Length: 305
Image (cartoon, rainbow, N blue to C red; front, side, top):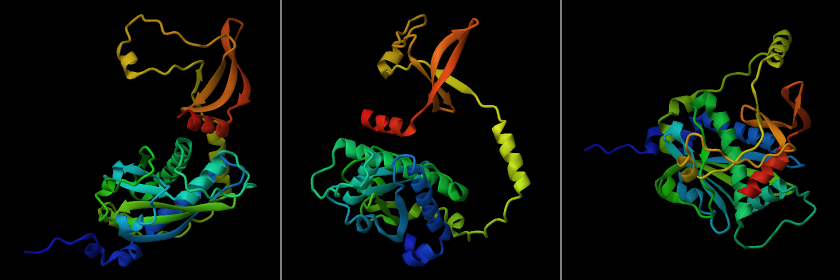
């Protein structure tokens, strides 16, 4: 009877497999750059996020040091028909909290051993969401999938990827903000990558030649003249599924809006500006008052979660 080949034998060993998957390293590197740039809008000082290592092993070995105070979560990857794991150690989590809550690094890094609070866990989860979004964008040209974050927790559930013995590829990121930081690890089952190895084996192409400046200007002009749809939101009301199921035709829903309520102007689901609702010459009008403070709304969503 012929034995079934394992993941290592398919590639000739873990180290050999990584050498044959150049696009895997590039994906994780691009995600780090994109996530760091995205975080510039959150804190005053831009953070550093670098791929420190890309290795292979069992999930138990990879996360052997991730015990005690950590924040971790599963990453659903439906396009790859798998789930990944992400985890941040204490130093990285406290650096995220300091950055996202507007710290300036003047205070010494917290050295206590207490468990993380719910707010700190949510803040780390908000960072994980941004990293997951960056990973989705980075992998799109290679083997597209979206990475969707599950609810963050403070203990690793190894069953998410099949148990501690599951072989994984693990990207270790070094996260530094305001002079402090720590490690963040993203682990993906090797079996998922094996099914797409041809895509990740592709050798990166040479940099494209410099674009024609006239063509660039033409594209810019066309984009700035593009028509977009705007939606004005006067008020919103949260309802439970039970309340929605009981809605009837003709029922009146009470809103909290008043004539002085400010209106949020949205484009493609993103709040852009805040307006004052009014009327002129028999038509409804919106007068722009201010641009939306994305950083403030980001923190409000975390604290309200």
